[in-house]
View 1 (cartoon, rainbow, N blue to C red):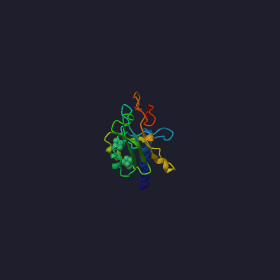
View 2: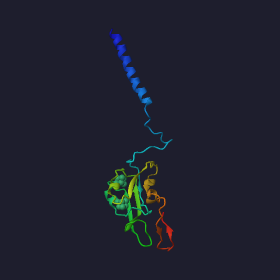
View 3: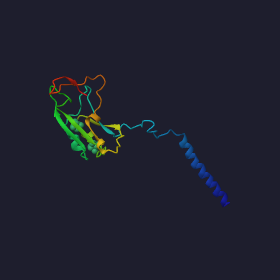
View 4: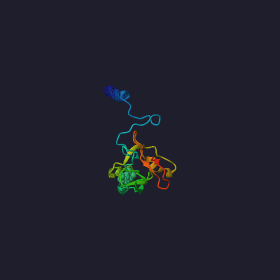
Length: 169
Ligand code: SF4
Ligand code: SF4
């Protein structure tokens, strides 16, 4: 009698386990086929930063250094320059002539994004930054700058030394 109960108990346990297996087989797949297909991200994913432009194509960063001050890893390096009548890069008095983030040290905490008064710096969804050469992990402004929005007229820049108009990138 005891043996029969053991066999029935074992069969019930196996049936229960297989029930879970079949149920999962019928459920939608939640894994991504990366790298064969692009991964899906939640909106709040914190990837490589993007330096934003306004609707006119001007850079939003006004070189106030608040992001650098808020960064716990001390990995943001900025050199500020003045906008002039001949050279206008941002909508404020100053713009970031140099803006580097060292991804050797960045911990993707988002403090810089929260500190920015102009929403100039945001997290993008870029994540493929692994490298055997750590010098490539220092991203420059040109690597992170958002493209000029469609329909916007890029600001005209007249290089001080040349006097010839050139479209800003
Ligand atoms: S995400 Fe954090 S660690 Fe990275 S640059 Fe911003 S403040 Fe610094
Ligand atoms: S990204 Fe924002 S906080 Fe950082 S210097 Fe530019 S305007 Fe200031």
